Length: 75
Image (cartoon, rainbow, N blue to C red; front, side, top):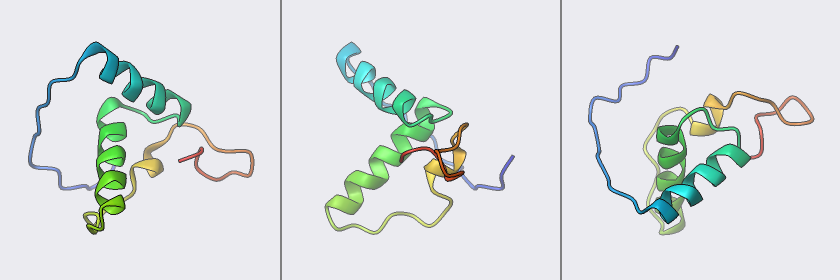
């Protein structure tokens, strides 16, 4: 698939309500997995706070559908 070096695992606990919000966000953006959605949300949160995101391929590149103009689906 890709040659991403993701050697660290992060385990989190979410409430049912938090998980429903993450899943809803993920499905509206056609993200392939919860992990991809959480990575994208984490990156966006850090950027909003002024921290540079880690180098690497954006999570939106892992989408499974394309937008109306052949671009990755709404990210």
